Image (cartoon, rainbow, N blue to C red; front, top):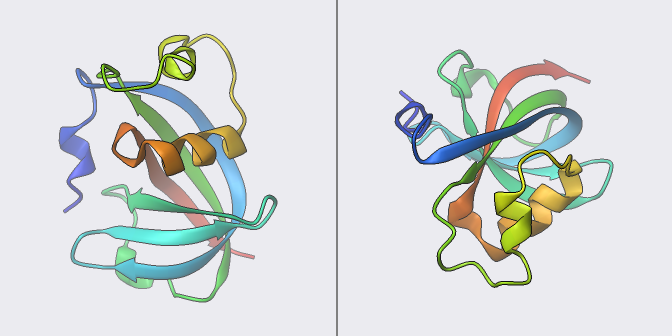
Length: 120
């Protein structure tokens, strides 16, 4: 069971849905989390499996077309002032790479939730 479902709502802002080609590099079926490389940007990132996706069915070192819901935390008190706008201005479209880069700086403030996955 994914722990993400408990995060939806009050503490998180839904930002965007994005579909990307990925290469799954590692996963933890028990925690329902994985690490992948975005094949368009070559940037690594971690994601969580939604409750509708079987983590066990996703193979490591395989390429997939994956759809993610991206959420950012509403709690941004520790975010550097130069980056605060990224988290607070919700009506500005950010590209997928920007969310990955922000994840590298603030990994606890961004969640990539895998909602659909198909082999490439």
